[in-house]
Length: 296
Image 1 (spheres, rainbow, N blue to C red):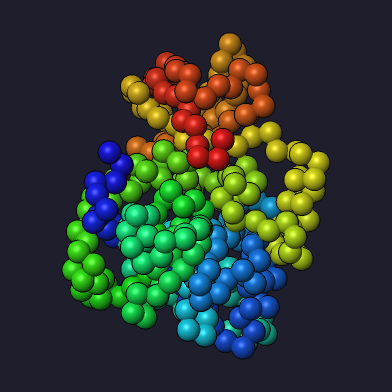
Image 2: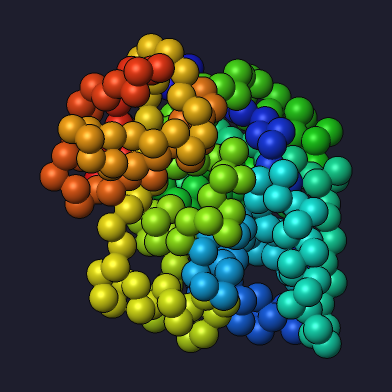
């Protein structure tokens, strides 16, 4: 069972919060991120990337409207580098960028619990519980909802909502089964194209918006159908996998491991006829299979 019950809540300790506000915040972010910031309102949040100029994965975050600015909910290990990159693009823009990871936490809860507040639900839908944003994950509704809140208030709110702090591994197991990396994406950074990390399937890219960092190459790859590799979740059956380990079938290389944690991912040539989902593979050191993600 992936989620224990409707009353489970998971404190995502490996998530951090950057807050951006100021007169130029909208135009500043709109010019650099892969998604359309115009989608983000008090009632709707979105998922987005910050790519390299070549269109490779660099940073990812969920964008949530908060007061006069925006929360960026991102992997905590990326916070310092993200802050530096955002500052680099700031130039003369009238924006303030703050790391609020010591003030706010991100917690996840079951989609069915969110349905207690709203019946007609969709990915990214955002409501307020008191003053704090609660949103359905904009990447995939099956991943449930999340709340951005002060840590002390979290415990009070959890009690008010009859929620029980539960084992975070249950949440990561669900995320992995859906094909959504939530941590340990360092091996993606500046190495894998955003489209190869399933940015389109995870609702991180708007192909109708104007220019942003990495837009030209990303649009060209999409238009010319240049994507031949994708990130897929991998279930280890026996043994251990190593990062960058090459995967072969019949002496033909079909991919490599890009994350060898308990919830592993590989970059696979999904158009190769040798590539098959749910087929047992053997590297000599490990037996594993590629899991079918929610978007496949």
